[in-house]
Length: 68
Image (tube, rainbow, N blue to C red; front, side, top):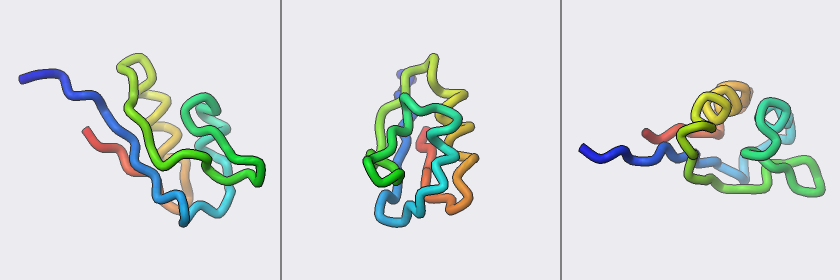
């Protein structure tokens, strides 16, 4: 079985701007000029998986999904 890349999916429209994801991994969870999440998701490199998971867990709104 091949090593599928982990993916992050973000319900961008539900972001309220807590920025806790960016506080953990600003390079993975960039914010727009208003302080809201600036991406709807991304493929996660193996070396970034732990930080991507921590960033997702940090979201109080639970709008960041980790897809294995």
